[in-house]
Image (tube, rainbow, N blue to C red):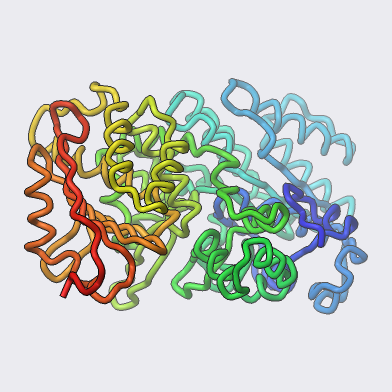
Length: 528
């Protein structure tokens, strides 16, 4: 089986014999429901392939759809003039790049239809092109704009003047749609974010936003049914490679790459980029996150007054995370729309959504990046995490002490310097939240609620259970005493795994571990 890793061209996939997950029934419905759409999905989630599929459909390339649902659904195969704008490949951090790109597109289209109006603004020239295309071909035009928001994201929170300029240029370009309805058959704009509050779309009639439309929630990405239908062979190969059962391989794939939900229907969607890479390389790794650092998010979060542990695992009204507002104090919509948080539950009575990390890949990668940005340790976080995982796997709590102490000591004083006690407490809590959340290769519970209180952290491995309690400017003995008094180990009384109770103190003065004590591991009989 050939996997189209990095291939976004529908034509190349079909002609090259690569596996294609058939979305054409939904595409047919999409093209026959309305005519101007907007779709927000995370990067590398199949938006460009969707645009390419639409382009070939509207060009009437019936031969490419042989054997797909579209072949039976479509009977006319009309050929329309298609105008495809792709913002993926350009770097918009330099002035004039956006204007030059749009001018290049319009110059090419004008030559195609025998027009030449260089004195007009580029949006007006595009308007004339759409009219000429309709008049000369007898068919209404199709406009496909891929990653429409990249010119804004590239400069977001780094160059406010250029950001405003790009917004105004795009607004002027898109405003052409308002006066050309009679010449348009279909319009789709894709992107990561919906800048509805900053006037990008105000120049024309608001598009139909299908980002949370239950009919199209799986238009991009791979569902469980599609996974089992198209990839049963590769999954069986991976199971043999890892020496596990088929059921266990499915479970690992789900934990690593599944978990996206795009509406209250809560259909599980896998990240297609990560799945294809995993099948191609036969390795479960963080492919999506490592393919591009979300620098614009890190920049936004640097200004944000809240910590990620105060954002995740909470219910929100739709207006709090669907519509983006250009305010660094409110990055939640950007985090959600970029794919670093997703819907995990829906309360229909109050119309509120629970947001959290979609899967282990995203949680591990995002929090590692956040930890590096927030803490700025001199220690390389990826290597440190691997050493901690080895210590956890081997049942070496004393080695954990050395690793935690060295990592915390590598954080610059300027990062941990806090003037008042509440800020010191907040820094202390967030530091350990980030550290433990990075260790998502195992089951990790941070501030796990129990009947007698909240334990700071519990980590479960196949052979060991670790219960951590930390005290800010306290003693390790006090931490262990709390574990005992609150009965944090009680729920593991019947567990055959070795259990370690770890009490530690964190010094706000030195910024690292002050004391570290481990209660000897014991069997389940010892907990009775």
